[in-house]
Length: 169
Image 1 (cartoon, rainbow, N blue to C red):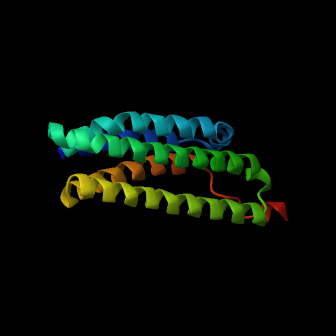
Image 2 (cartoon, rainbow, N blue to C red):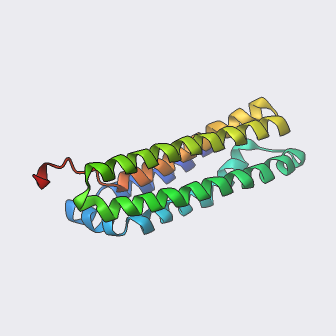
């Protein structure tokens, strides 16, 4: 467990370093937001398999049952991640002139994506539970949740907060 915490701390350190920027650097980052979000996602995803392997400690039989389920889940999550990146690109493109309608559409898209992400995680949990055990499925769910929180934190720390509209009045 200590190794997991240390690994997660290293990944979180990447987010902290990315968040410590001046306002001018923040504006420049907004222009490169899509590339940055993809980089963060791929950086953590590259470490996810190693972290999952370490934490789960599967036998050969468990390993053979788990990874096909996980690959299917990861494919679903990648598609949702691509939609999220498209939403971030739209947010970045409209940031300086964000209307209430744009804000409402982006919020609805974000909530829909989150609901579909939760549904994908629930489907994966049920499949892992059926193939292995409820405890193993819970352990996977916990680790996946922690890793997803880190990815979300990294991405969120790079996004500027939506303008309040006062500057447009």
